Image (cartoon, rainbow over all chains, first blue to last red):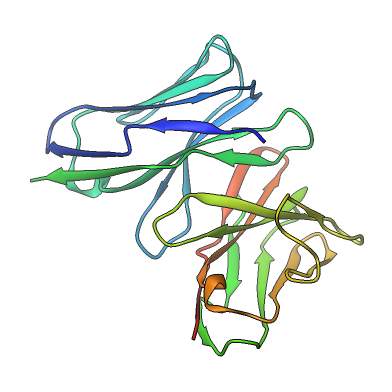
Length: 111
Length: 113
């Protein structure tokens, strides 16, 4: 089946630093989604990307849909302590709409 | 986006028993899904819940173990049957509809003892 490779697996940064994480796939997706999951909660959608090459921002977050449709990245600028959590990329299958998730990036922000 | 309510939020169950998890969406949605998230892991799709017909299961998941119902556009249940400790996980309901992305419930944290 389809697989998403998400990197890095974990990041330890200082407050105020910028963060970048990415996902690559062996197959094409028609939608890329980025989620954040806090402990004890379900994933919350941060950004959705629907077109190859699309660059979208949501506050301090910026994400891009790769031109090849096989990759995406998420950047977080000027990190703050509440950015701590697990970030997941997800690709939407070109068929009937199911999502495939990356392995997740655990973000720790030191004050 | 839609708001998804899942219950129970957590449960501790004896092995060999079954647990039914309910998922209620506050608006009509196109598709509903059930995921499993094992401790420290990513999300794995169990099945797509189809309204009025049998769910579509992913490889490795079968109806006898995870029967799913979706009687209408806003409600679905997942049953974890004949549970063993290996079934201890977070089970998540997700939905998508016209004009919004895939939304998740808060999950059901299941511990089988």
